[in-house]
Amino acid sequence: MSQMRNEFSGEKRMKILLATDGSKYSKTAINEIANRPFPPKTEVCILAAYEITPIVNTLEPMGVSHEYYAQFDENAFKNTEKNAKSAAEILENKNPNLLLTTKVVEGSPKSVILDEAENFRADLIIVGSHGYGAIERFVLGSVAHSVALHAKCFVEIVRK
Image 1 (cartoon, rainbow, N blue to C red):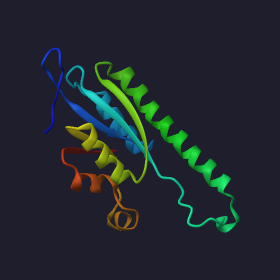
Image 2: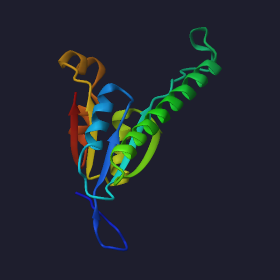
Image 3: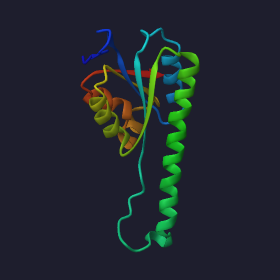
Image 4: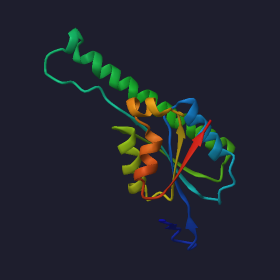
């Protein structure tokens, strides 16, 4: 487990990566963190990932202009950024001892969470679970399950 030392006091700080998608399941995870007595100055990176629309060719796919897709992607970014800021506000109000940062990254949530946790040197990743059954997990994939299988640190999956 990685630990960050405060260069002035020599104390170790816990580093948590909180992944959020704005869903009620993510809000459950946010509230779980907000109500815990973490050590002062615990670092929490609130991570929100979004995927852009792939444009397969240079022609306008299905009669829809590239500007439409660009606007769609811009809206996805803005909504994702709003989710991250909302999570930060909740945590800041309920648990002011936490050191918060937010990060919005384009890409597949499964990959983004794992990559950012490694870059942040997280001790713990916290994700909410949508509670998919076997069929939904097979068809849709489970971000929480994938993160739990492949993370190089502890993972907590919060269920509603």
